[in-house]
Image (tube, rainbow, N blue to C red; front, side, top):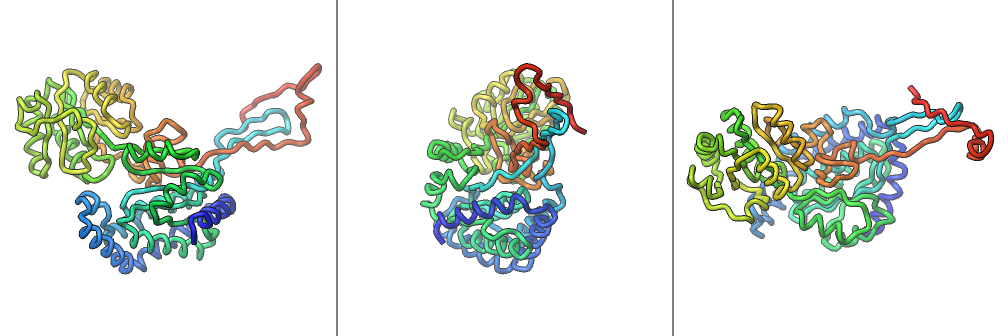
Length: 427
């Protein structure tokens, strides 16, 4: 089936899917989970083929780690599906209800966006998350994953389509695009696709934005920071730093730069070096950092780099303001953390850092749709549009206005003797 036919079917399915009740969608999501469990062996075998081919093609180790989809990750994906099915239906919620006049009532009600095109990295678990979130929110989806995961993505998309069809979901709501040419094709399909979500580098996202008329929900680089304030608890700061960098390095919410206040640097940096090097982390430090600990000299480019690897750039700063200035200059607006026992200073940091996620005394790794209780995420938006940060169900719905009347016309509300609007809140 060609790309245009796949997109046309998705557009038709989206119209019907928008009216599907929440219990039907939840049954479909539960059936998808059961199908993944039943076919785990076949999925792992397909993934093994992808891994072997990618190793021969010398895919970078961080990307190989993302590509792996074994029994443990399948089980984790199924738990995510079960959690998603338990969430409230985001479609049909009344956001606002106003009486314009007696018998003339206005409701602002959530509804699906329509057809969403998602271009994502070589993570098969992302395909499961993205498709299930779109299903729950009543959207059709066109999926373009990394070619490295072609075999795994193909079997996953097929299982998801079959399981959901058997549960009563309209056919064609999920489509898999497989060629590089399909990406360019998607960008021109503004009559079929309502929103594009590109997951990848900042340069890739900017390329997508510059080459389409379709609205783009952009997920830029994950250049995340941890700032250890002069008032930080050193032990707490150490745990947060190590977790932010090392818990899973090949993801966008892992820390890439550590900023340390000069007032605590002499005591904290030696602790941090010992703990980080024990985890295999290479430290790239500014000149002041290297006066305290051994480190590779950091360059200007290091402050702008998303390593996705066991590398951490470290800079000593003189103030909270200087840390904020550094983050707003070099960061990607993703996730930034301050560690301090002074809550007032922490809130000042959070007010002034211009990022989608700003945390006090906790790891950057909490920036995640599943951990937020959003039902996983279709991506992370660093844009300032209707959705920002991890984009879960609420970011995949928009709203429409419904006005219920009883024969009213505008002429009755204009001119001499016009009726007046009451504009009373309902409920």
